[in-house]
Image (tube, rainbow, N blue to C red; front, side):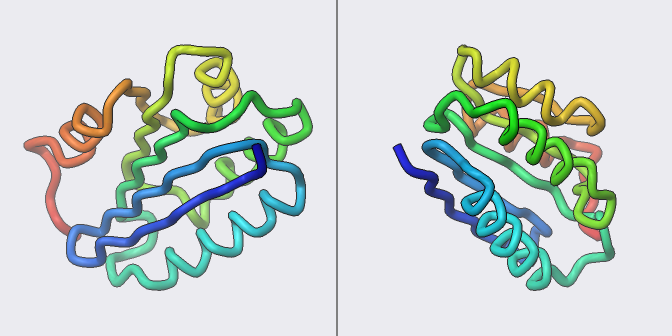
Length: 127
């Protein structure tokens, strides 16, 4: 399955929702990063004050080169979110995203509802 992604920005809540599916090669990762950067440019909150939910339940197992590229993307402090939640199926993909996000504080969930509840928990304050 070829790479597919959707990025939606809820500006008032400083919320970025990303859905990813398929297999990402280097050109697909570059397209994703460009789209992510454009989405972040729409945010009106302070830098790094947004929260991000990434739904990768439909993402294929990735090549090690892709995992390494995603690790670099996630390690970039210019685009780090205040809270980062991954919605992931129980599979090898779960261990791959944990490796890719090893340098980031992130939480992992099985449903979007669980992830959103954590992202917007009682301690959440709009920036």
